[in-house]
Length: 185
Image (tube, rainbow, N blue to C red; front, side):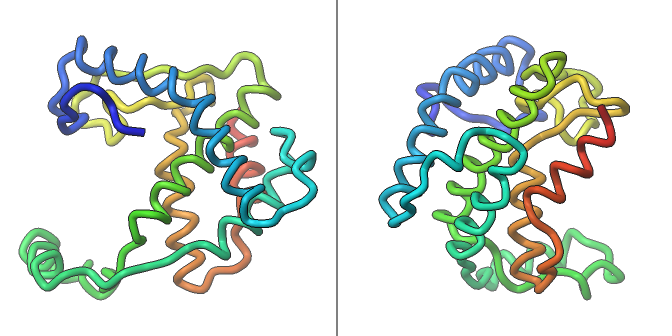
């Protein structure tokens, strides 16, 4: 999922750049989900029919993904930067590891599937982006709009779910995440 244009920080994008990125992102979704389904099938999963973009399909998808979550140590440079930019009271919660690039790629692809489950079930939801306020954590990012009180940035929630899994919080999964977000419809 590499754009054909230079990627800059979302917060620094102009409205035109955000629109260009958004259009590219949305065009890529079907291909990314197809690649994800191919990876699942190639891993030996036999019952591919279970991945039908229903809420129930999130359980086998999470079972598949969680077995593939890998981490790597943060570099000393990364740790030093965190120590210099974060308040000291936060540092106790900062981990010395990060998800590896393959896990991040899988998490983004799974997040697109996760979003499609919502979009299929709730037709009032749709992809979009907000370019204001610039201080919004999701400014210029492709998000699912139509939730009460906010928007869903699928990559953030799925990456955070993967981090929670690594931290030993097994009671969280894609289906429970779906159920939480469903309360905001």
